[in-house]
Structures are given as structure tokens and as C-alpha cells.
Image (cartoon, rainbow, N blue to C red; front, side, top):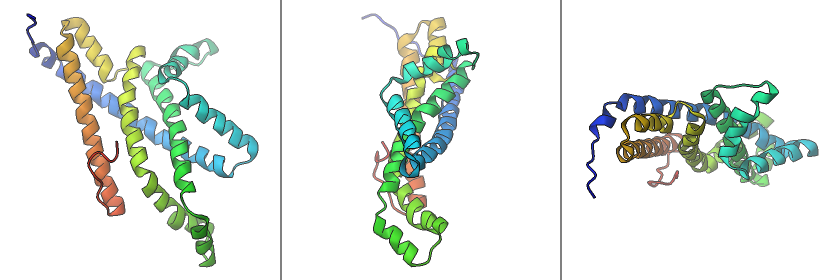
Length: 227
């Protein structure tokens, strides 16, 4: 093996990788924010909505959870333009990621709500709490505490899965690495650095979520609990 490692050519374009990492985080944050909104609405609809609504939500969840994310992002980017609906690569990535994480968030949030026992709701009503107060003090906070680790893990998985967006040339980290590799032909060096950046982002987010959990609920989380 006569391969000579040369990281200088990659670090020369490190600003491009850093810009790609920031796009990765931005896409992930946007998708998670809107995905949580979708997930909350769908979870409530699945629990309390009429049968047709519950059926439609169930179809959405099963469709997304049982098809590859690559196919979903291709559908948004390549499948919708013939219908007159066009998005650029970053927009298509954000939409596909939002729809994807919304399905998973639906089931996570639904499970959190269902973890609240009927007796607790009845006790709140017996104390004279309004419906909003019951939701706020008896349902929302305990349910959030129960699902917080799962949602944190889902966010990190979403961030890592955003690398698929490189297939449609979205301006995220993997696409930035591909562009540098195509110019420098330093495949090992480029993807080693990209791997390290993904690892750093994952571990950093894990620490942020652990701190946030402690701040919200006053309890420490073990290392890696959010993964």
C-alpha cells in the first residue's frame, strides 16, 4: 500500500464542508419543527378524530414508515414536476424530511399521550380543572417527559438521514463532500473528515438534548440515552 494521505487539499476547502454542515442542521431543524406540528395534529386526530380521519392518518403513517426515504425524496423532487409542482433541491429535501419525520413523530406523540392513565384525567376533572388545564398540567408535561428521549433520537436520526439529500444535489454536508472529492480525488480524506463532522454534530446534539432534558425536568440523563 503506497497511498499517501494528504488532508491539506481537503482542509483548504473546509469552509465548504462547514457551510454544508450548517445547511444540514438548518434543514433538520426546519423539518423537525414542522414535523412536530404535523405529528401533534395527526396524533390528536388519530386519538380523538372520526373514523375516516383516523384511517387517513393511519395510511399516511404506514406509507411513510414502510417506504424508503430515498424514494420519498425522489418523489418530491422528480415526481411532482410533471404535475406542475416544482421545488429546488433544498426545498424538496426539507419537504421530504418534514413529511418523513411527521409520520414517526405521530406515533411517538400518540404513545406519549396514551401513557397518561385515565385515572389521572378523572382526578383532574374531579379537582375542577378545565380541559385546557388538564391538558397542560396532566397530559402535556408528563407526556413530553416520556417522549423527549425518543424525539431527541429521532432528530439526530433525521439529521444523519439528511445525507440522502445529496442524491438530488441539495447543499448539505454530503453533497459538499462529494463536490470536494470530485475536484481533489482525495476520497479517503474527504469522507473521513465528513464522517468526523457528522459524529461531532451527533454527539453535540446529544449533549444539548441531555442538558435540555435536565433543564426541563430536573433529572439527569445517562450518556447516550437520547440515541
